[in-house]
Image (tube, rainbow, N blue to C red; front, side, top):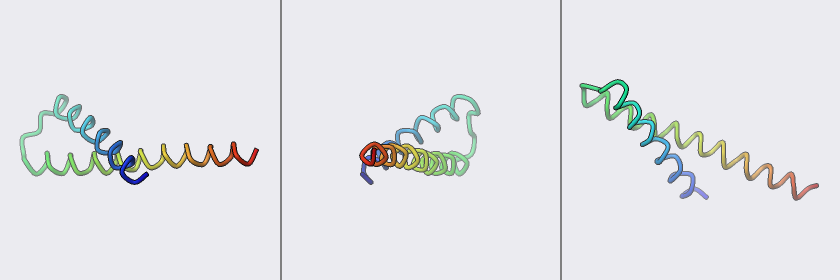
Length: 64
């Protein structure tokens, strides 16, 4: 479950970085590195929310 979360988050993060590179064209390396780290962390958070929603809805279906 954790591996799936990390995989989804990293993919979302890299997609976000690619979009940011196309839009803003960063000049400084530190800005680029921090944007990669931030995008991956945001992707992890989104993946955690998605997976938590899926598991909680599955638990609710079992209760019904």
